[in-house]
Image 1 (cartoon, rainbow, N blue to C red):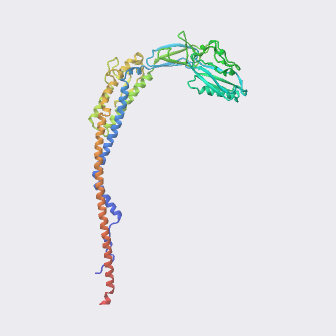
Image 2: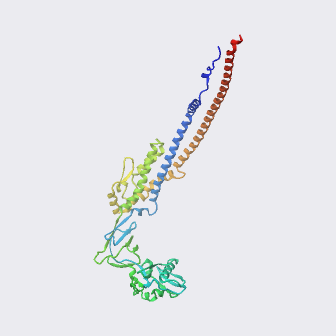
Image 3: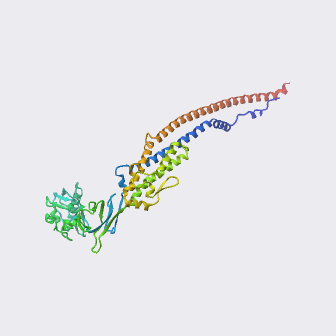
Length: 479
């Protein structure tokens, strides 16, 4: 029977998509061990992530606890607040452990900066011949030499601005110079001491005679308690008496003066801020120092927040990648027990004695601020002892966490160990994936080689079919 030209159709090579499907199926079959290793790697990576978060959280708890074991930590619980009956006149802040009580304060005068003004001068008048002028300026307790250079063409306003610039750019000068155009045609120069009080008062020595053009001479301050006072047109000081630059107060019936409106050496542990003077009919202000429960509560809350975060991180680890881990479960149990244990040896024994309660998950909450305020008012040292004394909450937390959270601690060692296992896994995965791809590539090449052979055979078969067809066509004529 003659060969049919269609007889090779069923023997053609599979299409390229078929090859890729076969290789994908082969790759999937051989990848199962690799996927198992990758799953294990993901588990180890999750463990490292959880360990890093847990270590960071425990380090914060350790830090907060260590703050309470430092010398003087008990003072952080002796916080104070001050209430002023006339806060628009005077306010105050209190250092920790400031004595509780009250004081009567009448502000007769607040401290002020010394001010010296020149005479009123016409802006456009000529000022002085060309030359270099010097004067010594004393203010705020320091004396400096100011140098002004004029070219002789300056009008009065320009000259005053040059003087002001010279003053303000002189190192360590104790006053600020300002040029004021008090009318459309006139101008004045003022010097203002940088600090309040009589010790900061302004005086000068006119070395080269330039200041006399401003109406300034030494007679202005010859008598400290009878200085020349400025007017709308003449030079002088804002205050006639040096003593008027100082604050004047009456504290519990005692008259006192100070150089500044911020006073920290008058009442023990208090810093007063004078805002204005009392008016004639205003009663004295009463400053009342009481226990600052909010301040002490803030100190406690920072520790409780860190403690609660640590418990939550431990629970997350034990319900996640470290489920059933004995060491972490023991640490959780130990930390939780601290919330109800007796602490120290003072009259207050547990955290519950100052209004702190434990939830079902062991977290601690300050639920009774009134109880805390009561204990602080009795004696803040008793409250502090629960946290700062030997055997207190802070010391016990430090003892539990110090060897766990350090750079050579157990958490870091476990993290390092998991890192080593991850490196081994990565190497095994890389080797298996490389071997797999090499095998797939080998099969791909073998297939392509067979495809080439098939194509050659198909071409030869076509030639044979064509020859057979030609012979069949001429055979009848040859018989």
